[in-house]
Length: 352
Length: 271
Ligand SMILES: [Mn+2]
Image 1 (tube, rainbow over the protein chains, first blue to last red):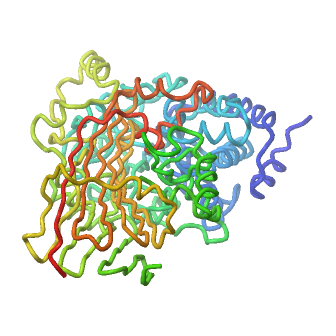
Image 2 (tube, chains in turn green, red):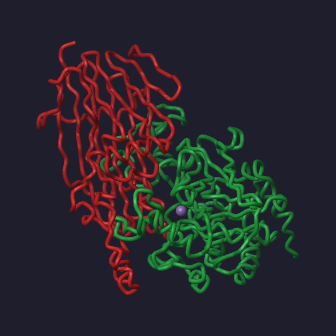
Image 3 (cartoon, rainbow over the protein chains, first blue to last red):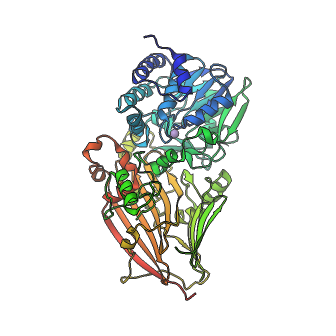
């Protein structure tokens, strides 16, 4: 059967999942395509830059509504497509289809969540298991992650990356020769590009008290831009209430595109529209309207990172509690029956 | 059924019952101006998701008031020079070794030490007008768990997040409150939950209990901790590679041994 990408995109816009075999084929083809992409992809403005999405598919649909649909609008996505939100599968499916359909108009940069290790704890793995009943789809996508590019340069002026700068990288050429086709390592330049954060209170690099990872200061930014003849660094990776943040005398911007992050932060989001003369405009938006969002029950399930097996915020029934251990769903039902409660008022409320 | 009125305003929910008022306020994370102020005040980088304006409070007619808020909780995070030596992420040793091989050891500038896990034994802010209203240790009283297991109707229930940080995807540190008010009593759980991937789990719980008609408020604080490996090994075999149980603080809590606990009591003045 011939792969009909337009049909795939249509059905995803209608919130329908693709078949496992289709995802497999799409991932294979996209890997071939990405294999020939440089670690530093050069693009021209106008382009609309999108920060972290984290599985908030309904908000991604809102982004297309606000920013325009492909291929009318060129898009640069800065990574962290998955985890945390409830629709990582839909988000990855549509982004992969769009990349394959319009390779020169859609760029996908790798974020620190585009990793096997991270997605195993932060939601994507569990979501794949839940929606497809096996880990196959997770394998297809996480294998694809290894091929995503690390950075994009817009019109030789704006350097775009998920996290930030690295003490081992002084020039763009150093990024070009890196071997990126692997799981994100814990240390080294590839890790730094997806992990590091700016620190407006500093000038140089500093080591995080966690014992791994860097923050970078104003002089680092200035030196990097000067050395590479550029005038701006554009990155994502950090939540901010306003949806964007501009630092270091307008030399660095953070763009954040997941409104009401985790369905509870109440923050704004933005996409950054870069015009043909390099002008930057943050298009700020709120969470998708009520009827476009997951139901409160679904959102509730994600609250406190619960695994969506119905425990919700959990019963708090620990140790000597009546329903210790797992099987909380059954537990809460039993409790509701015991207590003569309707099923809405279950063990969640009877925490201990 | 106890006489009570529910409170529902923008961002605030709560209940008036007997001589008590319980309020829970939920709003968005702090904006960048508020974050700058809080950072300066606390002297440490604040958690990624900081609900600095959220609170849970309980107030008694006699002037007793206890509040739960994020910033006072963060003020108790260890900032001593030793604080960041306590726990390192799982790959810290490897990171430092490879770093010296890559000749990056000239970067000796370490961000001012603080306990980056945000571990806090905060157990509420006492805002009582009467300064004699304080909690003191007791061995004769404890929270009536049997009472709390009864399926009494719940007049008011709420949960609230004070702060949350993913520790740059090395785990989770989260401080939450839950409250339930029944006709005969109320019960609060303030929980600090920490997971450092491949390193450890830690839970600091504070439970507050009052039985209406009595003149005491009981506070029970406990510490639970265990290694990541030990806790992970307790995932039922049937769950296989699914690590999501490790995200569920209730499941983790049921698996962690208690290291310490303390009970305190506060006597309300005769109203
Ligand atoms: Mn990120």
